[in-house]
Image (tube, rainbow, N blue to C red; front, side, top):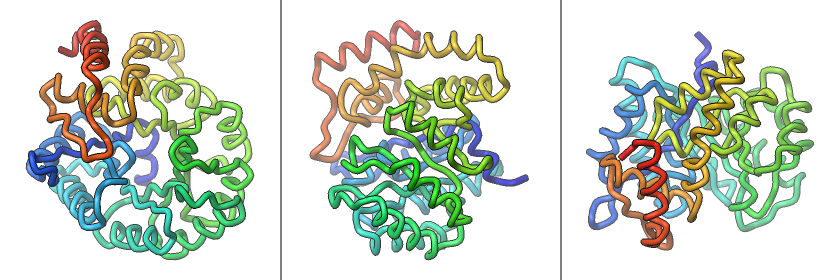
Length: 299
């Protein structure tokens, strides 16, 4: 089976557990990965939700190694996607090459943040990365964090010019733009939702799945949600969208992954510790998160 076909569903953008000294809790991380695998989800380590921006390259290496190792031990062959982007092309290449050697199945590469490169510079950036590795690359467009949008025309040029640029995670919140991406890329180009609240809309347009925050705490439900849509059961999917809508919204009441880590602690999955400058949600927002979880009978 083509392993890329595993990306037609739910990929969990995994949260990262920390000990009291804010080092990575390796034992808890392994336990959490096994939980996700057993629920049937594919794995993303070191995405935004994993707090990649506050983790060192050594931390990145450790989480990638752990994820690949647990995936191999499971016998279920989940797809391991490694977040390996940077605002420096040289650093991104280093992270990508490490992930490839470690055994990751694919790479999630974010638009370089802070530098605000123009579109032709983005083509040069992603092309250099694609030329440095042989495993599949999923582009990651999240302009709310990078302050630079990856335009549909740029995505199309990259999709047609580089064989190993195989898809994109769309977290722009712009349905018109995402429509243009789907329309202007090859038929086998993988378009994934990067926003739980828009997964229904993106998959209705032809997207194949989601890189999900919510699946950290309800993996089986999000997997079912994507399966229903890939099976064309749109009335059922619409009902599920409304059922999960309040959860999708509350998980972004503060900067991700604060709310989902708080929810995970309330559900007994892992603690809510985050590395500064990120912090757990305010008490008033924690109450709102708890209310939604209770309404869904998750606590």
